[in-house]
Length: 286
Image (cartoon, rainbow, N blue to C red):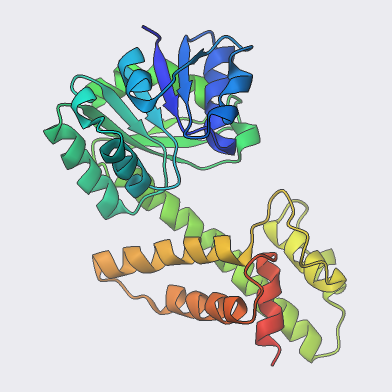
């Protein structure tokens, strides 16, 4: 058996697998599109031929898929649920707090231990001291996985047994980020309305601030170019939808995510979905 399996080899999943291999763990990898797994063979990973083999290969399994729903649908589609007994599942996929609680219950009923985590950094930060991952679940399970998780992020933090904590912190951080993005779009509108170059707004922002690239995109009109730290309008919609879902699930005020959703949906309706989030300003100018 290998030490750990990684399911899902997108940009983030690939970074996780690479970091574990570099930390000298034996790793099994699997991806629905087999070609994404091939490069890991030369790095020493074991390539699973199917999901069942990936689950059977290791006592610990990381899922890094777009959502928790994608994980459960994948397991159901491959008839792999029976292979989860006595496995430790580490979910590093996007989820709402309620989805994390539901997943904990679901995996427990199948005999698996469960940790929920949230990745609060870019793929390039994985495996470095600047990497940030927060995790929750039973302390004994976290302790058993601590070495592997520490290899993924120097900024690893255990948030206790409340399984909702990682996704809650993730959504709180997301709210802050979206606030910067949409607040800066409005700031650019203010500049345009008063005849001040948006580049003057960019110039006063702190170096490295998320709004720098965003406002420069608006100033240059380069909406088709998505920067390394940027995202498309469609991706922004997925993030805003998370905020809306959490507000609905918990019953808190939803006016801020509702406003963001209105802006994003307006940009999508205008055909800007694949462009940088800054493109929302084009739908707001009228």
